[in-house]
Length: 145
Image: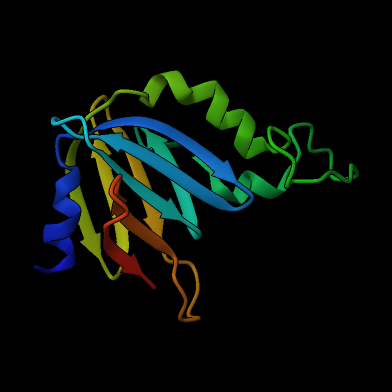
């Protein structure tokens, strides 16, 4: 079974939750049989609605009140512009179904209902794990580097 076939287990799943720990972005999906599927990503991630970026990991390192002078600790929960955008827009994507998946050059794009899109993009030439897809039984489906 190739990676695209493994990723297709997400088709029809509902996006249940998105959260972060440091720079690890965690997506939780619920399948029709109530099992859970997760993606953990440590690379560039953005969420778009109608081709407009509404959440981006580039904002992890910007404070909510980014004036360029403020020193802040991005490792603190709810301290970054990323956290603010995620909280502000969470109602838009929670519960939306995955309707289409594309996988190209190790980049993963999940198209959701209501013209929402999650893009998980490899952002370095260095060979290391960037994201993994796994089940609630800790069965790893994909480790991508």
